[in-house]
Length: 291
Ligand SMILES: [Fe+2]
Ligand SMILES: [Fe+2]
Image 1 (cartoon, rainbow, N blue to C red):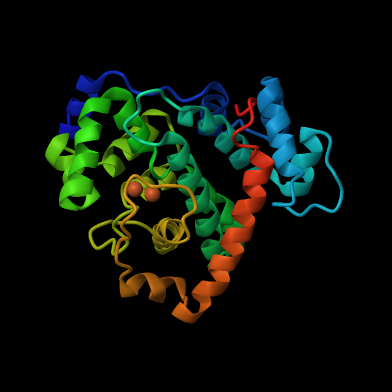
Image 2 (image 1 turned 60 degrees about the vertical axis):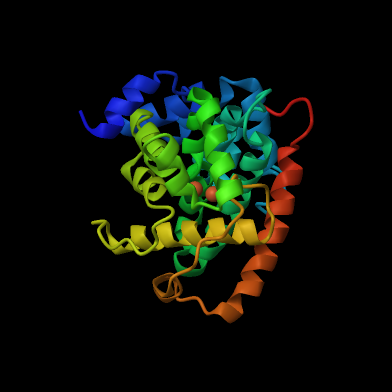
């Protein structure tokens, strides 16, 4: 057993993946997930299905005509888009406000949405078809923090004190108090939840865009760098609230491999702001039915 598995086995109280996301992952693993089955899985949860449809019809996706059924949504938006939308809505349940939580969970959800939108825009600039995948990376990138506050809110509060009072880098503060950081816990959790390897690697390396030691294919490296940049952009634009508002420095390799000039950033930022606002409106955060 590795160190982290050992620690995780001691944590015990890990969050469980909500039902719809877990069924989608299971069927994906057995390669039996098709459009029909995806529609059935989503339709089994009425509240979730309604939310997926509302999001599909939002200005975020810019459809000309309204879609009224999940099958139509899959036909028009595409299988991957609807699948990732359903995963995102299902995962949202893990970001429920917790009384006495040391972190602002809603703020972290908004930060995750902001990161998702920014990573998607940056990715689409290089790989038109991979934006959806980058979006899901953004939704899940800080899931390790949710696991931390679930299992050890007291310790995580100490981490936040170190961040605030000693301006210690986040990963160092987590390692000092807990023994490992949220990237490692998050990626381990996604492994337990049977997510595909790409997203496990993305979460693991989301604060390490140099990727010097990681043996990953070049396209995945670009996606991870887009996630990294999206995360920094969400902080810079104050989309949501990260537990660590300090931005990481952006190394040269990020600009080079994503083929972005600094002068393009303001365009990306404007696009991220407006898509984030559209998504937020469709998500209807703050209303009673926020499942
Ligand atoms: Fe992070
Ligand atoms: Fe983040």
